[in-house]
Image (cartoon, rainbow, N blue to C red; front, top):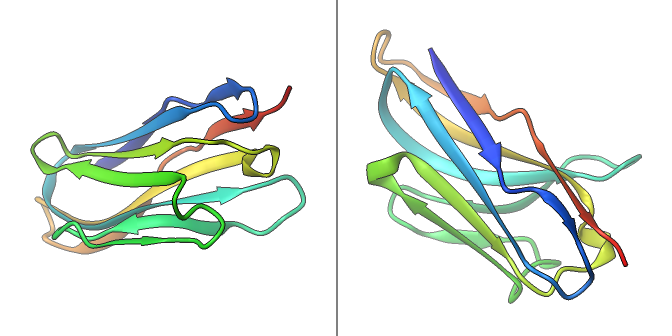
Amino acid sequence: QVQLVESGGGLVHPGGSLRLSCTASGSIFSIYLMGWYRQAAGKQRELVAQITSGDITTYADSVKGRFTISRDNAKNTMYLQMNSLKPEDTAVYYCYGDIVDSARRRRSHYWGQGTQVTVSS
């Protein structure tokens, strides 16, 4: 069984920084695309950033230049460094991964449970 667990959320003042982590565990054969979505209250979930197994990155226009996505394949962990945070970045952040499990060798989409990020003075 594969699990994704996020950490690093919290309350920060505008202009501050946070780093989110997402670690995949369980019977993992390989991990392909990984990324972060977020969902603010009353809004649809939106893509924040994603990174391929070859470290090709994509960002939403709203976070370009402020957020940096990275991954450590040896640790099955992905990071989201968030700088110059704004109140509109307030949301629950979810990580996801396209992962092949060792048992069935089947590629599936997995989600973390989400971590709250609140940007407020």
